[in-house]
Structure formats: C-alpha cells, structure tokens
Length: 154
Image (cartoon, rainbow, N blue to C red; front, side):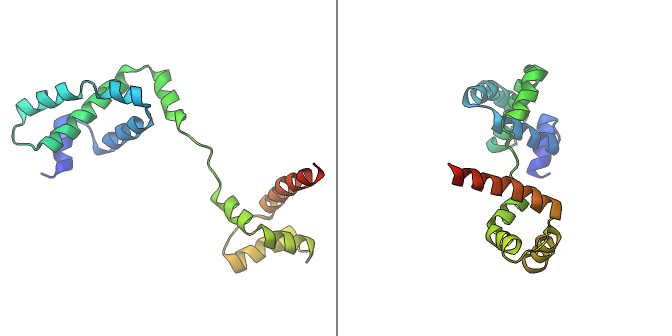
C-alpha cells in the first residue's frame, strides 16, 4: 500500500478532497490556521494508538487533514464561501498582456499603415502567432488610446 492509500484509509478522505482541504487551509489567515491546527496533536495520538506500524510523517499529515476538515465543517457556510472568494484575484488576461507587449506594432499598423482591425488581427496571427478578434483589438484601442490622450491633456 502506498502512502496516499495509507493516508486515505487513516482519514477516510479521498485524495481529491485532501487537496481541496489544503487549498482551503492555504487561504486562511494565520490566526485561523492556528485554530484549525489546534486539535491536530490530539488527532495524531489517537491515530498513533491504533496504527503503530505507520510512520510519524504519514500520521502527522493524516492528523493535519482531519483537524483542517474538522475546522472547516465547524465554520458556517457563509464564512466558508467568503473564504473561497477571499483570495480570488481579478484574472489578468494573458492575451491582453501579449497584445500590450506588441502595442507599438498595433499602433504603427493602425496609424501609419492604415490597416483595418481585421488586417491587424490577421497580421498578429501570421507573424506573432497570436489569435485575437478585430473587435477585441478595437476595444483595447479605445481603452488604451483614451488613457494616453487623457494623460497628454493633463
């Protein structure tokens, strides 16, 4: 039996749920982490009494999972949902970052060469392997160039 199976049999938790517990634990602040780990030592000794043949590191991990699970089951559902939302950051568009990196090219094609948004989109796909819609390019143009013009006016 491998370590994962041993931990699953000791805790009764699936590997998927174990990973979920650790992700929740990572989102807790320090005080909440300390509260969650308070029963860990007692859980360790309870499991150790029944399973002398299992290594201490495996028992430590199993008892940690059980104490985190106990903590999360003890908090109210509203707090649990708030915890899930706590660390969500606004997703930065990878595609947007790439386009901004190529903005000098987009600007030159649009202003100096007179390319249409569709032509710029095709150019970016052909030469930079970046597939982007013409509408998204136009939307970015409006937001970026508007900010540039406002900064110039100030």
